[in-house]
Length: 141
Figure 1: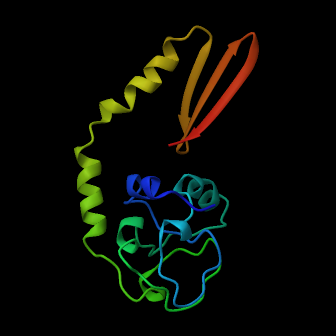
Figure 2: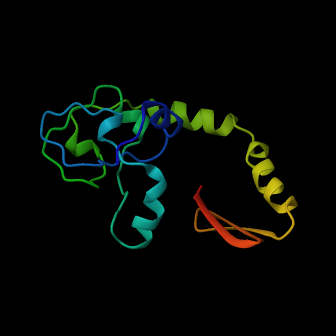
């Protein structure tokens, strides 16, 4: 499923993978890219390899496909005419500037709830709330 422009900008340093089949000559936009949140499961299952994949930030600056590619194909340098070499570095700098403490309150808030258990494993946050009805929530990180 394609992603929104805002989401693409938030995940500029994540690997770029096509969400749908795209023909040669297609200029890549956020509409052509898959949600990076699903990648860990696909990689773990052997359905996706991200080796050599460019980042979302690198390909959203007018990259055009040089060959037709199927869905869930990582966007690599050999299938696009150009890519922004600084896009990844800029996104990495922004990620380093974001303090880790911004993520902590969400986990701490969940632990403060009576009968709630929080577990983080394999890039997925699992929240279990056992008040009345058992409620299980899993969020990709």
